Image (cartoon, rainbow, N blue to C red):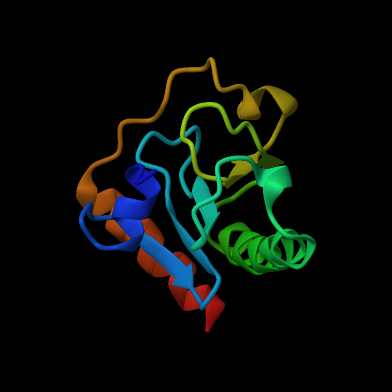
Length: 131
């Protein structure tokens, strides 16, 4: 399987990268529920998050925590919501979404339409907070 996330990892599809290491990659969702909505994926292409090896799954959450902390410093919100759906793309991933109320994480809501420049600006600000 070579899905959209694997193509993003290989640079075949552009993304607004937030952070990466040897095991994980974080980038802005192109159809965000909120400014700063970020996806965290393992580099290893595995469809179902609970099929990840325990150490890879645990590390993914720790990696996500670091990203969530940076997002909170950039996007005004009460907290960062976390969602794992796993039906829309056959590659394990975690959604990190700035929220102020529970309905902010409702995926049936209309998505934001941000310009490439807005996305790039948000990504830059989050990356700066990671330093």
